[in-house]
Image (cartoon, rainbow, N blue to C red; front, side, top):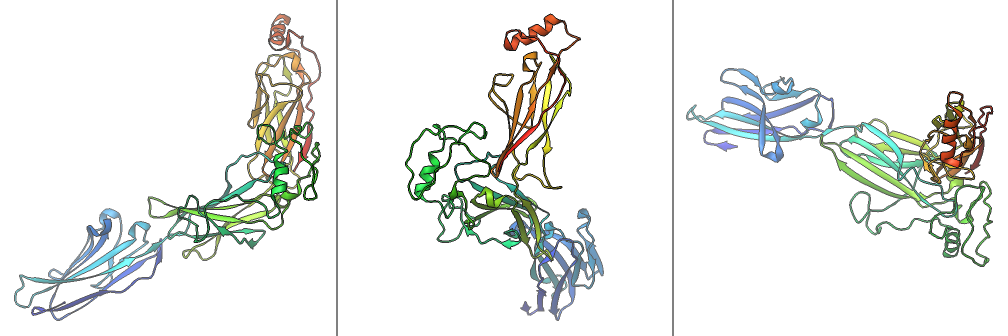
Length: 452
């Protein structure tokens, strides 16, 4: 600024991006041939509509005033034109202004002002990263290919991090796509969501796989001892193979087997209130239970505030057979019996099931005590068991998109000596026409049948 009262130029040195917790020095350089009156630093908020004083230097009284005490912040005046901000936070991100005033040469009643500004860019590394399976728990589909989606959730980064997936340590080549034409991972020339199928799937095989569904269009019964019968007939052709009625363990239609799947990638950015963001990156492909079981998938993040990539990983694994416990261990007529899943019969230490399995309970050869054919959950509760349930067999099916496995346990019901025979007869009659209780030893017979 030049005037008859003197000249005054103000510049602020530009700042590189800083990381949360760093100490930042703001330098205001000015030149003038007049006498300095004051230097005032402002933090600009609300898009420039609000200017908050953070520091004042008054040359008349040679005193310094801090206006940031309410924020529990310490500002040190290193030089008359320098302010230090220790341990910056995300809230400190934004523009700052330095206003300098000098006395007019003609009269000390007037002050000539000039200002400069700088933008402080505060970065924050991601705080957390996790990998989950979308749309789970989900059943295992034996006769048709299923899409499977891994979701990587990265929270707390500013700016938004770069997210990518690896399989068994190798970066996955992906095809970007967008959901509903929205933003977040879409690219030019890539249309919206499309059917994701294996490279080896053709129309002939698709028709054949659909013929193996129930009449309602649902997958055939999962239990290997009694698969649902086919209701549609078809003639085999050179492009098809005959699928037997009885499903054999680890036997799958050939079209499921693809060693070179197509991976589709989509990510969304969700702004958070504290100025950071949450990124949700999704990797979708046609699952191959034979090839994808025990595959290691990792999600990695690159961010300018990180010295090395941040990562989370999961190993896809089919259930190995539920491990069941029964309480009470010696069930008597009239007791409430609970059969609970306590984990899995895994072969290797630390081998976990992913994604989370779906548990279904059924009674072999009959309905459950409440009259239902099946019940979901990790626990089966049998209220006031009658003697007629003695020797009944219960099946717990654990399944996820990679496989299905059954564990059977037998219920043994003892006579209850604390109950009159008439009372026991009433309990028995409520379920099966008054069959009396039997006295036998308690035992749990566990049999595991795997289909992966």
